[in-house]
Length: 278
Image (cartoon, rainbow, N blue to C red; front, side, top):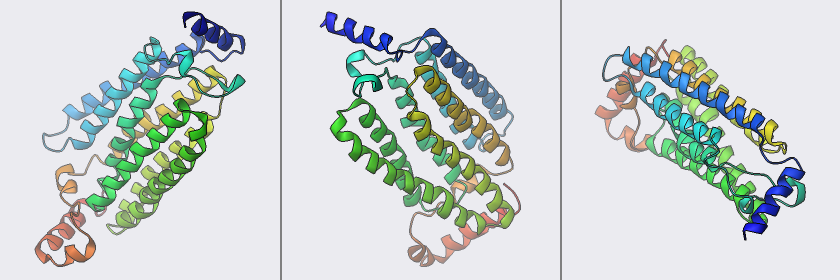
């Protein structure tokens, strides 16, 4: 078995598909970006009054997870063995499972941060978060599993990704614009940033050269996590997060209408905390 691992390792080196020290330097750059943004988020969080730090605390969790993931990748603590690489011939490559673990945690949290300000129902938000977890799991199975499962995971991944984009850009925007054109436009800007960045991952995933793939993943991770979160925190700096979360509907529109007191109070909170401000 040791001889087989050695030969597989040598094969990866021969075709130039094993990550070199130059590639690991990109992971160190990623760690520096994530940890710097984390410190900035903590400072911003401490400047906020207690009770309205929800969005900053979600951002801190996301950036802490990303920092740990990039730290483990930079130290080569999470690289899969050559036996775990997938593909045939020259498409084989080493993979870092810390990157996938990072996104199982962070993608639902990023979507949660954005969708919390829309007033969508709790079911719509939770179904989107579940779709995000399922999307990352499909990517893991596609990359680590047998090749026979690849097409099925691709189809399922496309379906759940389409659901995420529909909720984020269509349903979320419709709900946000109901609270005012200015609020809706600002929400759509944040949602479009996140959606366009997520659309870049399938393209980066097709890169075979390890240094190019590491650099592309880093650029997208920086755009989707520290850059996006700092921008989003700037956008929601005037929102009372406690009141915003109180507007999440626990039932559908028809059921909600049957409870006038709750519906009226929800509508008042939306107008008071959303209209003209983001």
